Image (cartoon, rainbow, N blue to C red; front, side, top):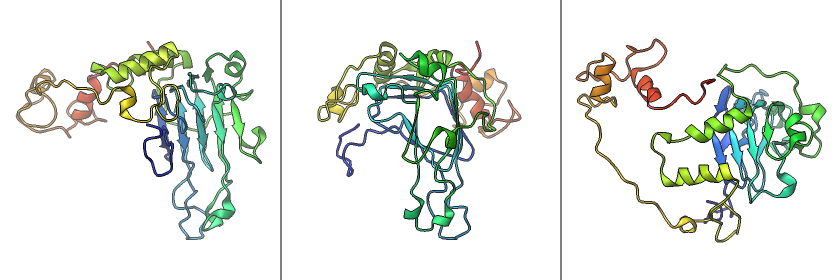
Length: 294
């Protein structure tokens, strides 16, 4: 929710994402004014040690195959001192997106190191980016070359300073094109095994380029200010839990089908995989593989 009583005022933001390393893929960000996402950057919070390394390590982020819809203030921004791959994401403006920001993939930010408790802890003050393959709805020019109108810069920065022409090393995942990711994400993102009315509505709005509700205070289309803007909290139906004799989170029937003992709590065992716990295998098999090439 945007203008909902936050101490800083309107604050309908997506999220602050960071990590070293971290991969973010096949997510949907819809109906946020800003932070779609905000890349944390790292090395921005001084430890006071004077060692030049900062309190947190710099981001090393692989960000791909995400869908971003109906931002109003900004899409992604930040990234001070970090390293980023932004590959094959799908950007679709919505009714709240200003005309002059419809093509925005990234706003590269610059830190003011002189304002830090210990400026020696800072790196460059800005991130470096490998940006390619992103689809910008309604703009063939930016889709063909993401750096030709899709990337903006804080004062003092330029393409020459921040662009990388080869990707940073990252964990390999099955990769979709941006258009394939759009289809996969909208089909399977979130609690897709049994969608509730809210998720179904938002996914429909992304598909159709629409917004059903507006903010009652801000007036922004699709970006609500309070739960009453969409008719209040929904009623959620529940059902009985599946039989789980050993209370390990895996139903008896599933354990038997996979040759596990339903009377032995072995969620943390590795009977089904050398890499993943039994409960992780169970959770994974609950849903369709959203990253499969087919």
